[in-house]
Length: 283
Image (cartoon, rainbow, N blue to C red; front, side):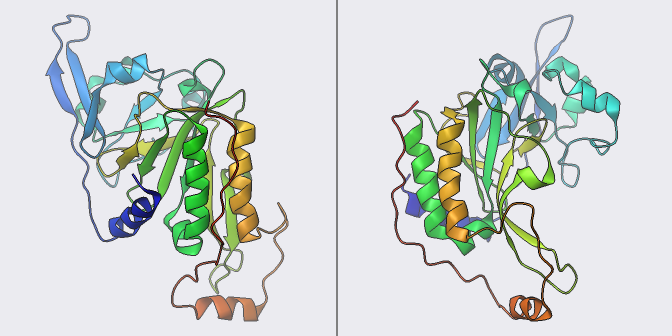
């Protein structure tokens, strides 16, 4: 799919509503575990759970909106935190939880990794497409060219997700590192507000996959492998285009800064010249 059409699809998604689809229960003929479950992990795409297991993916059942997330005690439960260090499979969860599921969450990091290449999700938010569409296109094109089998997904909010396994690298899971590219956009209610443009999900994080999402390129069962040098080299182009503040140094906002931002009626796209990012041969 042409990149221009992908960006157009992002804008169109904001005016469209897709819905989750309930997991299908199938008889397995196995007395030990008598069910197969077919989950809808993207628009018009589904898989039997054992196919995810064979692809070395760690996953969790996700409920219907507003319960389309990991367990509520994700951050508070030490037991759950220890549990997800191990790969989660079909039998890691009770059958009734699969009966009630409307999609899956995939754990990023080592539990969905393969051959020392942990799973990572790089998400370009819809705000990034409004703010710097040319830079998003250049980054996405470079990432697609860098791998043999790119996996690109249109998110339910109109953003883009590039999923991959990164060789011998695991991105830390802290607010500062996860919000990899952002711009300070202060408001009266939150003078330290950030508009996040790129999130990198790595160590012990997760992403939702259900029928509200649309895979534009590639296969969930065969994610690409990329080196960290290539991945963050490409993201570095986007970061420089936005002139991100020095890492970890948020300065107090002036009242004039807040007023100027709040008077804006819409995002003002950056004028980024068409640029081709050099990448090595496909991995």
